[in-house]
Structure formats: structure tokens, C-alpha cells
Image 1 (cartoon, rainbow, N blue to C red):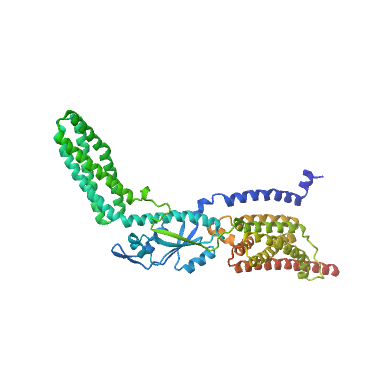
Image 2: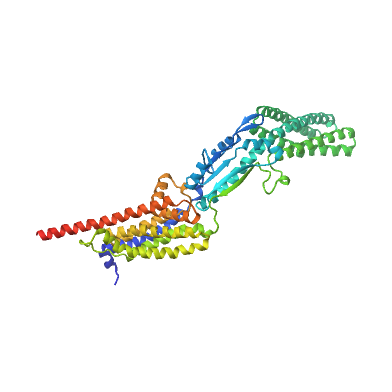
Amino acid sequence: MLGWKTVLDNRRAVYGWLLALIVPTLLVGGWLGVTSHVAQHTNRLKVAVVNQDSGAKYQGKNQNIGAQLSQGLMAQKQLDFVSVNTVKQARQKLEQKQVSAVLVWPENTTQRLSEFKHSGKPIVVQQYIDSGRNAFATEQIQRRLTNIVTGLSEQLLMGNTGASTLENLVKQSGQLQDEANDLQTNLRAVGRNLDTDKAADLQKDATDTANDLAQYSSALNAAVASDDKEKMSELATKINTLSYKMQTDIVSSIAGIATSLDDTKMLSSQDSVIQAGAKTIADGQNGIQKSLKTMLGQQADNQDANGTNQMIAMHTVDQRPIKQSGQVTLPTITAIALTIQAILFGIILKVSHVKAETLALEQWWQTFRVVGLLSIISAVVMGALPLLWHISLENIWLLMGINVIGLWLLTSIVWLFKHYLGQIGWWLATVLLTIQTFMATDLYHLAILDKPFQLLHQLLPLHQIQSAIQSAVFGGEVTNDILIVIIWFLVLTMLIVISYRVHQRAVWNKTLATDAS
């Protein structure tokens, strides 16, 4: 009968129950630790930028727009952009998961930009991704890169059309200033015959508006001369606001005064002059507002739903496209299944007594041959299922081999702990594999982790197993991962055999001591 006294009197039982309580806690805590706050660290995802632009003459001087755009990307905070010299090097980094995507500015970037006004053809930027091995990273990067490139395209459009637009705004603002001065003179002429207070207020507003318009016009001329696009955009917005005030406040007040003039029939000739000036100011304000909207890309009627008015278009090349969602989850599920199998095999494994007369390697083989056969059967069963997930037959055989070696490796971990520590060793191995499962399963990209955790992540045996499975599923380079798994297996096997050898030596020494006595 199980009671508190029975449990507390047995130290091994206490340790076993404590570990039984800890493992579920690790499962829940590990899952939350892996899946929580991931989006907050997506700005650590690295994107390699390759500039192939050779430069050309643009806006009257030799420029390298590709280099300028690359510098603009480096200043972004949404993603971690790194400069790479060649496309080959960048794609190699993508293959090794050192970066999550590659962005390539073409050779004729500056030339295309200079010809855009006449040809209308956008700059085609090549983007390389690896959605098969970096599903989470690809999803995050695609969304953020689209926003960033769209912003760059709008900046280029502003730079390409802004200068001529602002020059026209300077001329229009000067004309509006003249019209406002003429209107002010006419208002003074009719002021005596109108309500004095209202006319004085209107005259003050018109004077202030004319002065502000003259000041902004002068500043805008200076900004155009110094090619300060930021200042030009700011002043253009102020002129737009001031013009809107003319239309809504001053012009409406003038219209009211004109109505009074019409009713009293006192100044009909001056009324026609005032109305003409008000209409000129209103038309000028509408022209400025329309020009600003065009320059800032706010004309909804001319907006192409497909983005063909953008100066930058992205062409995406997916090195390992996902053909079915099961391909993404297969490596993680397989890694978890292998871990569970290794833990269950650990229950079956018995800690056999060391035989002094038998070779240590032979004793290892007597136990391993059973586990090895069961591993092969399990790998064949698990390896047949991925046929439903668009995986080639060649990769299926490779996947089976990885499953066999991976299960041997994980079982060796459990075996080693159980051989040294008995049942407590099995519990410790279970805890270790549970923690390793959450650290190794690639629920998010490796680049999000801090450097120490990245190194630890890459050293984990289960990570190498999962990485090899992932490469087999999507047809990537698998040799390095398999070699590391085999090395891990050989090291653990050597430790187990050495353990048998050490126990044999202890038995021999004990036997010799007994015989001597």
C-alpha cells in the first residue's frame, strides 16, 4: 500500500516523485517560454543585402542609388540588415541559416531609376527566401520587407517628381500673394460702406494671410535652391493649410460681404472685382492642394491596386517552397516522437550486471542489438508516412536513416544515465531530453536567440537531428548534420563501453582482493 511514510522513507521514491512533478511543469513552462514574446524580437531577424548597382548619371550627377538604398535599409529598425558582397555568399548564409532572407539590388538600379519617368518600368529587386527551413522567419520578413520597400519606393517617387512640383508651387504661391494684395486693396475701397468691425477683422485676416504667404513663399524658394526636400515638403504643407484658410475663412467672408453689397446695390462694380479675386485665390488653393496630393501619393483615383505605380518591384525566389503544411511540422513532430521513443526504450532497458569474462564492447552489443532492431522497425513505419507530404522516395530513405541514427543517439543518452545512476538516471535523462526538446524544436528562427543560446542551441544533439530531418524533407544539404549526429552517437557509445570497462576493472580488483585474502 502506498502511503506518505512509505514514500518519505525511500529516498529514491522521493526523488522519483519530485521529478514526476517537475517534468509536466517543464513541459508547460518550456512551451510558454518558446512561444511567448516571439514577435517582440523579430527585429533581430537578419536580411543580407547585396548591391550590384554599378551607378549611373541621375539628376545631373553620377550616383549609385543601390548603395544609397542599402544604407537606407541599414538604418531601418524593423529588421537587422547586413551587407554582403556577392549573391553567392548571401545565398550560402541563407543556406546555413545565418540570415533569413537575401535582398539584391540589380546592376542597373540607377539607370532604371533615371529612365522610370519615360519607361514606367520599376526596379526589379531579387529576394531569396527559404520558407521550408525558416517558415516563421519568412512570414515575418515578407510582411516587414514589403512595408520597407514600399516606403523606399514612395521616397524615390517623391524625389523623382517633387522638384518640378515644388517649383510650380512656388510660382502658384507667388501668384496667390499678388491676388491677395489686390484683394486687400479692393477691400480697403469698399470698407467704408460696410460694417466697420467685420471689415476690419477681414482686413486683418487678409493682411496676416498675405504676410504669411509671402514668408512661406520666400522660404520655399530658398529650400528649392538648397534642394532641401524635407524643408520643401514641410513648407508645401504649410502653404496648403494657408491656402485652405483663404478658401474657407477669407473667401467665405468676402462672399458674405459681396452678398451685402449686392443687396444694398452700393458697390456693384467693386463687387465683381472682389468676386473675381476670391475665385482666383480659390482656384489657386485647389491647384496647390491637388499638386501636394499628387506629390505625396494621396490621389486615390490614380492609385493602381496592383502597385504598378511603384518604382520598386520585388521578385521572390523561394529556395524551398512549402508544398504542404505537413512538411513544416514533420521535423518537429518527428524529433518529439524520437524523444518519446528513447524515453520509453529507457524503461525497457535493464541495468545488467557487468561480466568480467566478457568484453565490454560485446556486453554493449548484447543490449544494443535489441534497441537497434526496434529502432529500424520504428524508423520504417515513421518514414513511410511522409510519402503523403510530397517528399521524394530518395529523401524518404534518407529520412529513415536519420530516424534510425537519431533514435540510437537519444537512446544512448538515456542508457548512459541509467547505467550510471539507475532509475534516477532515467528520470534525469527524461528531464534533460524534455528541456532539449523545447530548446531544439525550431518553433521560431535561431537568429532571434541571443548569442550564447544560439551556440547552445546548435550543440544540442536533438537540434542536429531535427535540422537533418528538415533538410531531408526539403532537399537541402544534410551531410554536416548527419556527421554531427554520428559523432555524438560514437562518443556516447564510447562512454558506455568505457563504463562497462571501468566496472569490469572494479570487479577484477575486488576478485583479486578476495583471492588474496
